[in-house]
Length: 380
Image (cartoon, rainbow, N blue to C red; front, top):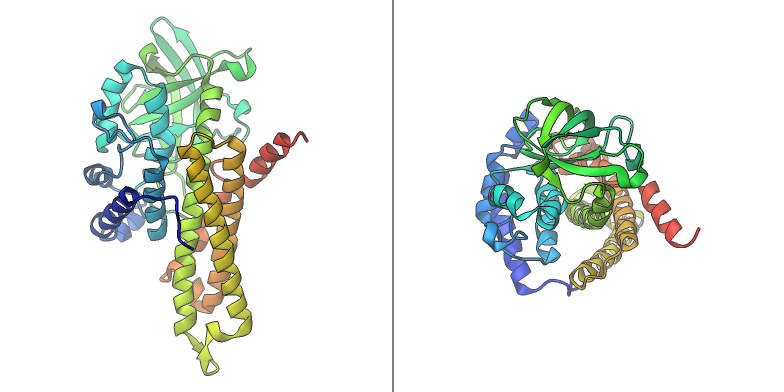
């Protein structure tokens, strides 16, 4: 089914993304996997290709586009290749909007030119050892001291935590104000008391630098407060829908590519004198997966149109996030089964996809949290 949400200019960026992956990512992916981290130079290269910064204001070196469909194109092409890539979605879809919408003119002058070029890499630090989906349980604190905030606490599961130059830290600035007691502080590389812990040993996505971060009496200048004091929780709620839609887009595109390769394998692989795809059970499985991916893609495209029209709600994004990531999990599992013993071999992409996609139903808000959000919107 033809997708109607994209225009010719979006497909032009898609072609650019493919060239970037072929020239800058594919030749280095095995080395990044072995080293357990993507080279910082890959972000600078993405900047040269125009794959980051396109949604930043032109006066700060960006492309001036406020069209999330460009974000979607980059997300889809990265997802098709796999997770041995720079975290461009974190850069464009998660951290970038905070800097674009909340930064003061002075902050934009300091950060956005480098961010748009890929010279500065961003991360956002929400999750803590004792507070994952429950953001209200955050214990990191920041106390005002003259012209500084004194930040203390630890964060975990932070994407791009090793490479990041700018870390947006969610901290409690008023312990007695409940949801109104959180603020966002930008911690910069090299600030005294800011230490990166271990790069976490994950079951999948080995080249993604997910890390622990520690803050011990870090003096963060008041000029690094992002957005309004005490409005941190509300800033998070405003930006989470785009993050969740981005994850849904990635889930469907990645699963679609796994399916495409599996379909070809089912045509080529023979057993008992015929292709394994020609057996009725396998043919039915492949038919079901193709149908479900088409349906999920249509809902994602409707959400993209809603973003363009300024109509996407947190509930819409939550529906896309939980459904598409759960679908991706089922698709990849079925594809691995169709590969038989070869599917269990890491030399086959489906084996990597199996462990890499598993986290998608967890990060950005678990499936259970998404369903709870939707349920509450129904008055339940």
